[in-house]
Length: 150
Image (cartoon, rainbow, N blue to C red; front, top):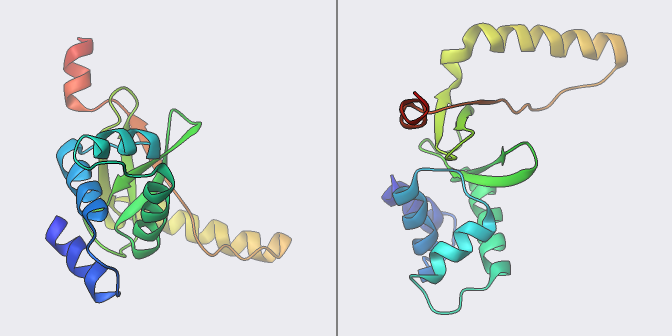
């Protein structure tokens, strides 16, 4: 997965800097959605003096390329999750307790997707608003956190 992301960065003309490599390694190891601040803390264990602004800048690049996606953790704080597939439409299921983030392919939510498409067409007719994109995040408890709760 990380090799795929590194290849994409290279193909799009981005240098494979130590910071980009470290961010991808942290994502792969943790498998959870993390705030930029948490990623910064984790990367500082691997690299000397990475700047928080540099982390934000790289996360912005990752998001534009479909390598990572901005999600919400705790309904307030923006966090970032590494995407398995690149530039394919998908959604995330996020554990409220530990932040684990898993992708859900859009085909698994086909019925909801069809209903949303109908809604978008209705909104266009009713209020003239053309929906260009949507974001769906499912929240709950992962298996490990469910076991801890029991």
